[in-house]
Image (cartoon, rainbow, N blue to C red; front, side, top):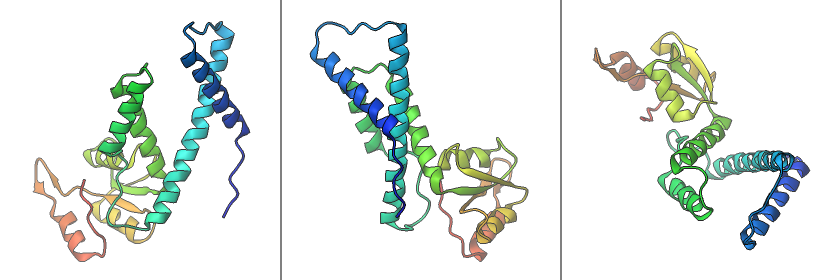
Length: 194
């Protein structure tokens, strides 16, 4: 097992933030800080967030190792229970961010962590419905591989160039996409649905 890198800067920032928050919570007099002091608070927040985001990513990787390969495609989206926990915490700290803003941030963090193990082939070009579906499922930071034809999506996964593939199963003009359905029926790959 690789040794965990030291993050003294992030830990020190987290300790300073905790001390400031505890002091502010116990004092009835608002904490007054000049502009330079506020920049230091912002730097401490950023350093502490980097520490915590990396810790979350490591925890997500360890959870996947414990869970094993599993069935189907794990979602990059946070569960309803996780979002409710975040909302409750947000309310308990005197929210400066709206819950919708916080939800967007947490969903992107979850998507970024999900890309730690995902490469995704999709029927291109970028900004198509297939690309948008892939980004919704795997997050904006997954390693995306654009291909030109539906069989190329399947081939990329079968040859190990991508862990997952996203291909359309129907569209508004033609209905069911028989080529995708045929390939799902004739290959060893499994459909995951979205």
